[in-house]
Image 1 (cartoon, rainbow, N blue to C red):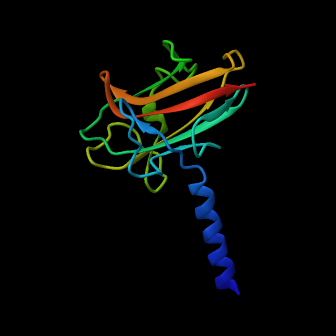
Image 2: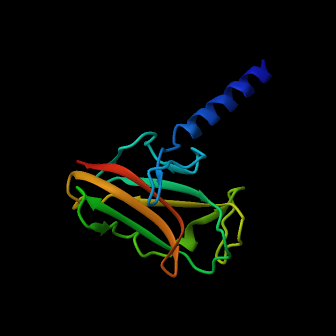
Length: 159
């Protein structure tokens, strides 16, 4: 009986984690990531992601730098209805090193080592002053204007 309860619990945990995997595109392409668990956006499995004003949204991004990285900055913008990208307040331009974890879940800090897998975990507010609109989200971790990790996803800002 205990074995069945454990097995059911494990299935439920795995199912709840996969429910957060989000289909996103590699920046500058129309190609999704080969690993569907690369990006997780809370309550968004398939785009468009609904971003409700006045709420907090969590984002997780698994990545492996292709070189050693000393510093990371978050570049988070949204192009409203195909227009010019606008920054997400309190996220765009912030220090991404404060939100990096290793695969076991332990907090790490920059510098990051080439070919080592990391997880960036960030929670951010959807401002009440954002307009209700469609938006193409561009989320990147950058060093010296070079993308170290990046994804794009269509979203809708809702009331």
